[in-house]
Amino acid sequence: MSDRIAWMNLHNHSSYSDGDFSPEQIAAEAARGCLTHVAITDHFETAKVRRCLTSEQLDGYIREIGSLNQKYDDSLRVLAGVEIDTNPDRCALHELPIDQLNRLDLVLFEFVNDEWNGGSSLEEIAPLIDRIKVPCGLVHTDFATVFSGASPQDVADQLASHDLFAEINTASIYKRQGIPYYEHAERHYRAFHEKVKISVGTDSHRTLSEVSNLGKGYAFVDRLGAATDLIEIK
Image 1 (spheres, rainbow, N blue to C red):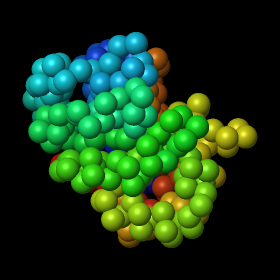
Image 2 (image 1 turned 180 degrees about the horizontal axis):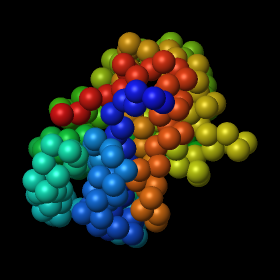
Image 3 (image 1 turned 120 degrees about the vertical axis):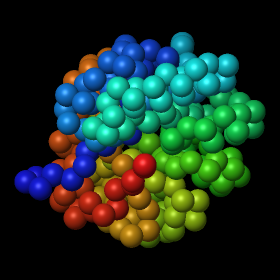
C-alpha cells in the first residue's frame, strides 16, 4: 500500500501470561516496525494457560504499560488490554473485576459462540460486555462457522448492538482447510462496513517479529476498501 494507513497491532501476549517477551520488548519491536499503536493483551484469570494475568497484578500491569508511553512520546501508543476466555469452566466470568477492566484501553473476548472450545454465546456474555465501558472486541473468530446460523448482515447487527469490534487475526493457527478464518469470512467483514469496527492482531507469543508482521491483515483491509472501518483507540 503506497499511502499506508496507521498500522495497529491490538493483540499481543507478554510474559505476564504465556508470551515470551516483556511489554517493553514488544513495544520496542512495534516502534522498530513503525506501528502507531500496539496493545498488550494478556490472558486474564483463566485456567486455559499455565500462567495468566490475575486481578491482583492488574494495577501494576496497567502502570507498567502506561509508563512505556512516556518513552515513545507521540511516536507509538502502547495500550493496556486483556483477553478474556469465555469458556465458563476456565474463567469465572461473573466474578471479573469490572471496575478494574474499565481502567484498561481495550478488552478482547475469545471463543464467543464457539461451542467446540466451550465458549459462551454472545447472548450469554452480553450483560458482561455491556458493563465494560472501554472498547471490546471478538478475536480469532471463525465467523463463517460459529455464526453459521445467521446471515453476515445479522451477525453485523448483533455485534453492532453491543458496540463490539471484530478482529482480523493473522496468526497461522487460525486457519481452516489452510485458509485464514478472516478469508473464509470475507462476506461478514463486508457486511461489517459502517456498522462494526475492525482491528488487526497477530496474537504474538513466541516470535518477536510477529508484533510488526501486519502485512497480510492490512492487505485484506485494503482489498475490502475497509480502512474507514478500522477502530481508533486514542
